[in-house]
Amino acid sequence: MQNKQTSLKNTGVLFLTATLCLFMMSCASNDSRQYGDVYDPMESTNRAIFAFNEVLDENVAEPVAKGYRLVMPEPGREGIKNVLTNLSTPVNAGNQLLQGDVGGAMTDIGRALVNTTIGIAGLFDVAGYLGLEHEPEDFGQTLAVWGVSEGPYFVIPLLGPSNLRDGVGRLADSFADPLNIYLMNIEEEEIIYARWGVSVVSQREDLIEVLDELESGAIDYYAVMRSSYSQYRNTLITDKDASAGMAAFPDFDDE
Image (cartoon, rainbow, N blue to C red):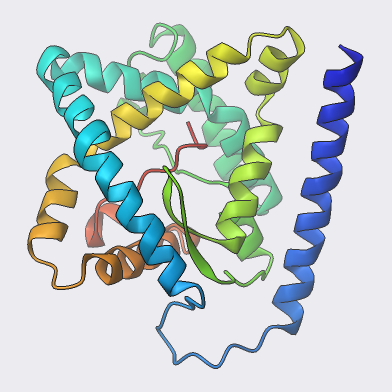
């Protein structure tokens, strides 16, 4: 237990250092890119990782997602997504507060109370029917609201598109999640991995048609994904309806 506490403390120090570096980079950065371009100084490496991810997706993630769709009826898939969203409430509401949106945080808490009780542990989005809509928020968005620039774009092995700001945000959300903290304290980390795995499959199933359409119509699929990710993140940061312009990209630490 002592070793675990030491490890968590070291991780916290590492995260704090990364966040401070990100703030410094944001203040000092003066990119020479043109307006609307995505800053991608590691493009050759990113393309290699992207190709690796595509092989895994084609041979593992997509077949699993299609199998999941085949065996799990739509109401069941919706229920699983509702539970994952409900579990993300503490992190989501915390980021609302950090962004100064008290009303949004109260809506999140209200949604959780309604869906956990009347919605049977979050299986049914009763709150949504009552007009309490879910608004996804993460620490990457919080950093953007605080004025931190996105930094260089990069592709994460297995996870896909990201940038420096969102990468730090993912790490922060993961270690700030009360459920993850509790499960680590009682040495039940396998539940964390199971939750992550279910989230990956659920979100990949949700994107089957979208990604197929993007790939089939793209001359340069890497460039299309890079641009689409940047646009999607910008819609979230400005609190626009992401579904109006494009489908949501997976955010595996958000659920």
